[in-house]
Length: 518
Image 1 (tube, rainbow, N blue to C red):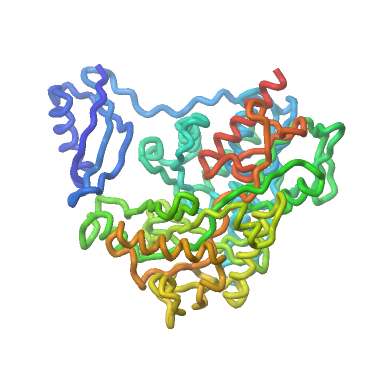
Image 2 (image 1 turned 180 degrees about the vertical axis):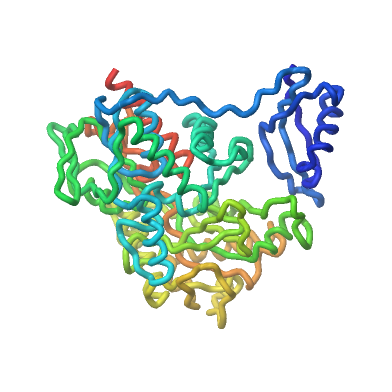
């Protein structure tokens, strides 16, 4: 028989196979000699009490043949001569849409404005070392999208939108570790994601699909409110009747293109703030109630929520053992993000701490219309650039100094390579954001021991939390409400908020196209 059980054990016991098997026998009521094997279904850390526990949900094989982990079996076809579907963007939405189209017997043609994952590295090095931003190849644009070089966290709450486990299984099939299938907060790591993305691209091409890099969309060709093709920056015309627009949350030129062509888009609320960095040892000590983290425990993270009902303040994209990265997509702006390697073994912990902003805030800043939120976002990023002093140096302030309204006389060491400039962030961020952040940090300091400290540094600005626009689509067909054959997809269209939810939405758009053709 196969019996599912749950156990709560110490971190050292969780990695001791001999102890675990004995304990499993005790909990399951089986004789140890009858246990053929066990498989982890879910693993999480419970750090609420003084002694953290590892919580395991297990399938125990009692006098039953053990079934090891099975890789997902994708029914992939040769689609070299099949009906073509154009996908704009090679992020998770575009890649997963392409694989799903191949399963349906359709040929994906992915065009990507940026470079392949290997070539992107040189442009990222230029950003960090020289402050030079290539507007087509950076932390946001290029193969794999924004997630490839900004952490690879796979946790999502979007379980109602699609099959999360299928997305994890596909990542696992193309090289991700097995633990993403059962960790409560799965994570791949920036050092491992590029190889996985490359394997997915090679699979798409092996099946007859196409992936074209440094191919930037400049126009969508329409006839009678229906897609008939696209134009690219190299003056090529590609005919198509089905177009998946998966360009990500930072493709402002695409938002402007849609706006200028009269294709309906809408301004939408998003969140903006700073990225805060502490010593990882402080976060470990606070979360695990100890002076030194047990070596069998992972570097600790946190999730904090506060503020008022109409002005939430919350942590975003928390990176244990992480690094703060420059994520600007154009010169003259400062955008920061965070990432972690797979081992999360850097000495710093960082997280976005952001504030909800709404239509009222945009209007107060004299921005109106469908691009109001985008212009508000740009305003803050440009002010941050000026405050930093240029060359991607970021404006920064110690946390307690920020709350007290004092310029920091010095700044702590920080993982942000381009460097920091000590400023009063009240002069960089909108007043409504400053007020909410100050209240939020004070509140978080009461929730988490040691969090509120002047050894923590705030780096501005964390401003690309989600798309500042929504591209309206029909909830059943997923096509644009006015344009036949146009499928607004994932983060850039306002329908996803991370790698997994973007991948799910990409698959949904592929399914919708297959349904329309059948």
